[in-house]
Image (tube, rainbow over all chains, first blue to last red):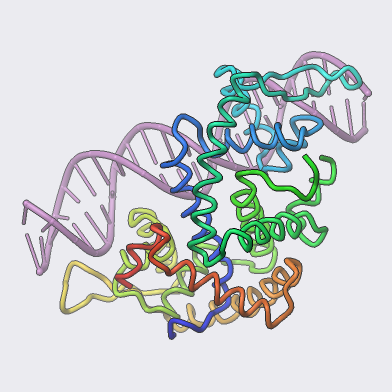
Length: 153
Length: 153
DNA sequence: TATTGTTATACTCTATAACTATA
DNA sequence: TATAGTTATAGAGTATAACAATA
């Protein structure tokens, strides 16, 4: 009942609350680019997924949803779907120049509020970098089944 | 590009991925009780919010959504809306005996998979407890504006 | 026969606004 | 006039199934 004990479910609650806060800050920091389009651009730029499905796995986005998302990004001229010679069913997603520009602009704002949030969470700059490394590495570990399909990336 | 550097947005990605994993495990661990109904029961039991709005703030659930959620919980006989004498517009939510039973059963399963997840994230039992404390405390700090309204709890 | 991506459809979740009853 | 809760409606997000092209 007191403020400093924790009950089963508090971990999930804390993670969900932090994510809500993250989304709020993203929306006010990055104009003209939604959080998911941003993540798509970021993943394409930094991980170069083999095809749309691998991209979707990494972001936890269903392939049907990703189709609509990519339709908009293509319409906005930020990405292109290019054929893959070795498998003509699949498409590789690449950034256009405009997409790279948009991503670069957004990333500087995201980096700023992420540092701010990590500071709010009690981490200094060095700890913050370490925490992100740790989370990212942990999430890639086989224990987390939400990411099992990510191996294909 | 390498596996161990991180880009702007990785923090948000890691948190979102952990939350997805959490939701997956919740669904397979707790049958007959959704994650949000569980959180409602848990919040009512452990924080005893003053009214529905305070309850909604804590969970990041809009009051209109909470109405539907509570309708179902009432229909299932897990909670009751009781009048508040000092403000007859508002209602206080209380658990029924069945609600307390359901919560207790669910909590043992949640505690188990939370411990398992925290271990997957690289924490031992002591670290895990500390991490949950830390996250919960951090989220209550004024820096995070998603929780500003929580003061009313 | 299985897989990649697309399309169509429906369903869930969530938000907006209007309404009531109180304050 | 403002607030707690409810209701109605619409919108966004997401999932399911069926389809085409290819493996």
